[in-house]
Amino acid sequence: MECQGKGVRRDNGDLGRRLRPELCPMGILSLLSRFVTLINSAQSAGDLESALVQICIELGFQYFALTHHVDILRAGARAIRLHNYPNRWADYYDSRALGVSDPVHRMSHTTRVGFQWSIIPDRIPLTRNDKLMLSLGRDQGIGDGFTIPANVPGEARGSVSFVNATGRPLPVDMLPVAELIGGFAFEAARRIWGVRSLNVNPPPSLTDRQRDCVLWAGRGKGDWEISRILDVSEETVTRHITHGCGRYGVNKRALLFIRTLADGTLTLEDFLPG
Amino acid sequence: MECQGKGVRRDNGDLGRRLRPELCPMGILSLLSRFVTLINSAQSAGDLESALVQICIELGFQYFALTHHVDILRAGARAIRLHNYPNRWADYYDSRALGVSDPVHRMSHTTRVGFQWSIIPDRIPLTRNDKLMLSLGRDQGIGDGFTIPANVPGEARGSVSFVNATGRPLPVDMLPVAELIGGFAFEAARRIWGVRSLNVNPPPSLTDRQRDCVLWAGRGKGDWEISRILDVSEETVTRHITHGCGRYGVNKRALLFIRTLADGTLTLEDFLPG
DNA sequence: GCTGATATACCACTTTTCTGGAATATCCGT
DNA sequence: ACGGATATTCCAGAAAAGTGGTATATCAGC
Image (cartoon, rainbow over all chains, first blue to last red):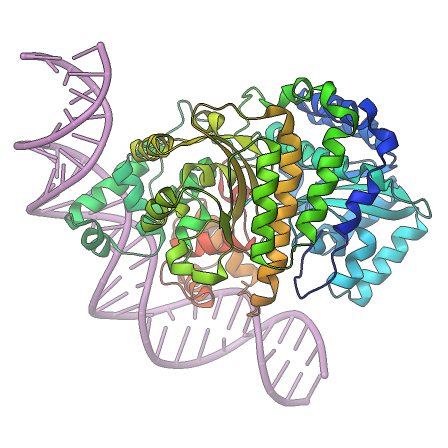
């Protein structure tokens, strides 16, 4: 819920007060476990969509949107997106590629945890177009919402939103459940869409030395520099890297960086200065 | 929990079975609300640390680590880190800058949701040194753990881990609570450290044409091939890419791939075949 | 003790990429 | 209409990376 630091007062402080004990006995927990089972047994986008439609209703929302923050019309089927917004709103949204500039999405890029839409104006600057868009949405029945950011390094940014019709209050008791469910649902979508899969079996792997060389190369070092760092000959470094390329079936070391990032052998943190 | 697609069986499917109903009446929910209050009222790193020490114990863990995935000795006070690991382990860890290559961290860069350490070998390739490090940790009492990824675009990647001593099983009932708490705790740390306010310098950006060239180069095309694809001269392609390098202040195109991945200009999906 | 994987090292040759300097045309917002 | 950012093109030498073949020592596992 927090994002900007700067001594802004936390809104989450009253989560404690939000959780109505009356709902507890079995209620929330059995709901949660049922939802998780539903989501994790989804084998297709259709399965996941049905699951979310149902979960959305049971949580006390009307709409949901699980989406990558990209221009959907351009990105095509590789981009993740499921939602049950009114078609008219979705068409308008897509035709203007609002996915990339939507203030809700922008807000979700500044925090790790879920947030209510109502706090957005206090956290990020809104342009005139933003306000226009939000009020257009309200006119079409899109009221307040709760959005769970879903960012995985190196992948398109995404989020899961649960939304109510204009005027209807958010089910605040359910927000913690929504927060967990949103994360699991996005992860299920990544699984179904096969976001990071390289589709090679067995998956390649590097030796320690190969990984060291790739690591330093990815930090911008030349082979000679790497040879000084690792105290071996320059040729050896070249060898390790080209062998690494061989394992991943690529013919340029730059591609090796990308493949090792994709399969988790290395991460952006490894490469970036800091 | 998922990462690689490939029809790998989900481990999360049994979250439902994990949540023991006996614990429900008031137990988990009051715990959660108390923890959230504790975390959100923290005004300093010390406050947050105390809160996490307490939460850690009540959840049934022994150690916690809330950290940015950076070389701590180099990054200094700007990097977020709180933990209660044994000093000996922490010193060893820091002195080797394991924070940047730790397999737990690597795994946390490939998923949105929390995961048990025990599944890591099935998800990302481990080198011999990785295994060595894990077993060294076990020797020093670091057993199994549960890690919640915490990634915010444009910032150092991070995570929150709850860990048990070697041989002691994870409190599986509490993992959903740990997942929520981990997210809130990381967000509280961002607030306390004032992370967002530090990022003042405007990030570089590429022109459309530059981005196109980088995109195709990252798919393994040579400049001549790209020139055929975009129907311009080979020189022009080279130019666009080197100009792109200039904007990011790097001297190799491979680094440009990494920077554009890091800031979200391009994504792994853009580069990977399929 | 054998086998396979790993780490190391060397050479010769080709291709690609980087570096530096310059110039023209287009598009956009003021 | 004008200034600034963008897109495009050209040249040439230097540096780096890719290709293909070979060889030795170590270590772990069978």
